[in-house]
Image 1 (cartoon, rainbow, N blue to C red):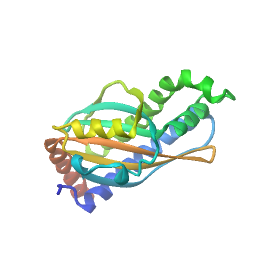
Image 2 (cartoon, helix red, strand yellow):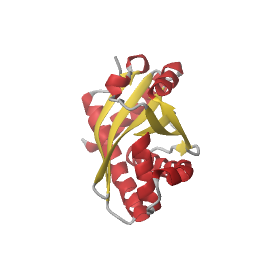
Image 3 (cartoon, rainbow, N blue to C red):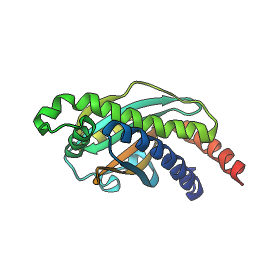
Image 4 (cartoon, one colour):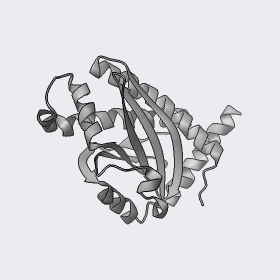
Length: 204
């Protein structure tokens, strides 16, 4: 179905866990408390195969941070948290006792900052470990329904593959589960595989 083996996926999980560690350190400074961020699993799917069950997206609404990355391979990255978790994360980042309603006006700015930290930490770890250069666009944030998310995934005709990372984010011992999605074209996936092969060859 795809060019990524279990060995490739294990290597990617290691890369993203390094990035998650960097992101957690940055977020800990912002919130003034311990932040733990881990990537427990990485999957690769064809875009046409992705549905809410595979993604375990049971919520009706999600906060979605999106960013474009370009380099030896191009990808669109989407960071998803349920809407309620997104507002809880914003409250932790703002360090305030504001109500959920009051927090809503800071939601876009704070979630863009969160996405920027997590996505860029993960991609910079990938760039460092694979010895490549990656450029990124500014992050964008919106609230979207599960239906809207999958409609956008399935309409990306040139992006045939979806790399799905499940994320555990713990701030002040409160756990939020998120998803990090990378949309890749067939050519970008092949380029990623080539660089992973070089990375694994260097380890061996």
